[in-house]
Length: 347
Ligand code: SIN
Image (cartoon, rainbow, N blue to C red):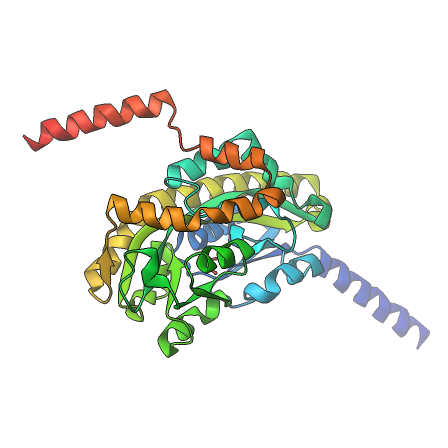
């Protein structure tokens, strides 16, 4: 009997060892569709990580808030229930005030300026702005510039007055809509379609990839191409989990992370115009283009928000981000040459 029990214990021990010897399971969770830039980056990470570390890691990607939605994902990461997230930069308010910079309306002229700031020393410093909360940032993934939508045409700030807008959980975005006399409502991404369809809110702000993949254009009559802000992401992990990984695994995952982030950014830059065109081709919502003067009116109405958050964010950071709107000489030259070429081709 005793021999049998010893044999059983030995068997259990060897079974538990073999269970430990299996691949490290890494759950990568996000709230958007697989076809968006973030969705594509997550799938690329899985492909690269499993290729670089065969048998050592298994990456499970959960899209569309399947595993955790907005409200729960950060908590889950800190508890170790999920290992990698890429929340929108607007959703870190509880952990750092610095990332609020990305929500300031009309701070960046376009996505290239956002990229220049993210790649600058100040932008990269922000990747460690949550280290005291146990979070490590690997890099930024673009989605794109946000555009306003509603069931009535939005041409000037007055048109937004009294309307309810869905916003992400961001105090800056709340202030942005209050600045035009609108009523912002913080709603999780998974609930936006329903909120727009049922009239819980009248409008929203989203980049083209999210509008198209979540069919927001089917439940909004008008989209104003405002480009008034940016929706990008930071890829993060729990510091303790990351630093507890074997050195070779960490190395392989770091490489997979860098390459998948670059891939996601490439997809974002290439696909933004395509998602826009798909929305237009669907002919569900009418596209409104702002005149220079109208855009300036929105800018003037929303700009006071900057001063409200300057203390939290830091004047130096806001200046550095504004500076990113200046194109480097090399890019300017390239633009000039391209314009010349386009002109010549059109004759
Ligand atoms: C996302 O792109 O991850 C969702 C952003 C949102 O909540 O609007």
